[in-house]
Image 1: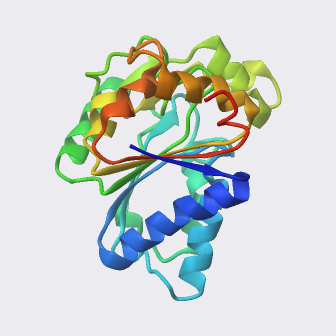
Image 2: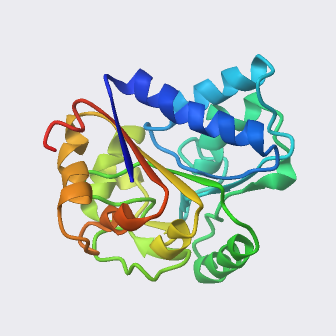
Amino acid sequence: MKLVICKDYDEASLKASEIVINQIKNKPNSVIGLATGSTPVGLYKKLIEGFKNGEISFKQVTTFNLDEYLGISHNHPESYHAFMRDNLFKDVDIQEKNIHIPSSDLKNAEKNALNYTKALQKVQVDIQLLGIGTNGHIGFNEPGSSFDNETFAIALTEQTRHDNLRFFNTIEEVPTHAVTMGIKTIYRSKKIILMATGLTKADAIYGMLKGPITPDLPASALRNHPDLVVIIDELAASKL
């Protein structure tokens, strides 16, 4: 494991983007696992800059997103389909056929999750990007989720729903279920980059790096990964 402590969010985003840009330069047909939420937005801006200045191209890149809410339209402004379009895809030359995001169809969630697992088993993810929740979740692997899970549907905890309330008008609008890559799926990635910034993430980072490896803190499962890079700012590192 490599721990990188940065001064602030901007530096953390830059450090993460350098790894991804070098990956795409060295292997233009890389498979990249993508995350959503506020954490990777700065990283995606750096990748767009790299594309616009001719440093990298996404034409051969294949992407697999970590997760998606269930029960909302792909066109909903807070769906992860919309997030990826608005924060990365619309500004680079990625091909639509190379974009993979879990379906938000609640009715057929289990079937679609199995199909997503099968698609991921046919590739090797070169880099998986991750954030971490205040309760230590990665993707939507909530506390108590088995380390043996592949892609699966899950009911969101009230803490996670309240953490995501800032993206919605009311708590009633926040979806109650999601679909996510499981820990087993994530762990198969060649390299994992986990980013965290801000004081609210300090307890989760401490638990991930210093506490027991336990399903009670899902991110702790990654500690023994052969190529894990944890990029955090000084506030997220404040309890280490």
